[in-house]
Length: 372
Image (cartoon, rainbow, N blue to C red):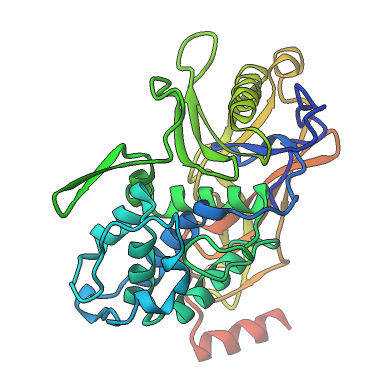
């Protein structure tokens, strides 16, 4: 579950729109700045392509493309492809299309025939791929999501909270491939295929849409700032409004602007900063430094930050009494928890800063005798 920013999660600017659900997260601190009904279940429809993209990338990692074989009956394994309104671009499972081509067709164009072939290519069958989708969802702690197909299907479910977890994982684990989602077009078999998920106002380059679909779900990345008044920052967001797309776009713009102007992220520790030491059992060193592998940042209300600074913050490093040797650099060592006015606002994994070998047999015997 994503952590909300203490008691400072923003209120909905126009809460009378009860059909609206959303969640906005700061990239730097991973804190939620604004939310409304984040666990309300809805059908992702075409947006399932993000889960298809992520699952395919995870399944293909470390595999030679030559080892991936597409079943010739791949398209027949998904009868829904024959329904009217499905996005087909003429993918033939008998043709050995490169993995990157299939990924781009799914991400940029939303081609559902490409999604089915991609699923068969990386997992051997659509059924195996669907099982992998749900396995990856559990690994990402998408607790309220259920997938039954690599393309839109009536029984699939997710939430704004779950989908935000997926967006963050895509951006962090596959930054190059996730950029396909924002490309304006892709050329395939002599066709120039447009990205159908772009926003109504394409001139607003501050918003990178990852999906905008028929169920009025808007998800993406918002970047703005970089001047003296508003430092540059990146927000991840999901908005859902089953009733009205134009209202959704209007509300999302207001909420994102509010998050930008009313909150600010600050860095508490740089990556690699030593934050403590942990005793090592039977190690050639008696203890090892504990550090953080990435910058530790928090997001706070701008007004209160100017007035009080960080004096309301409390930082607590939780770890076991000792760690057994051998120790490898980067091994999980504990959790750095950050509180504001006794409310947990974010946490980071703490890791070991170096390798520590284990004492040999005779050294361990000597150490035990010494302790006695």
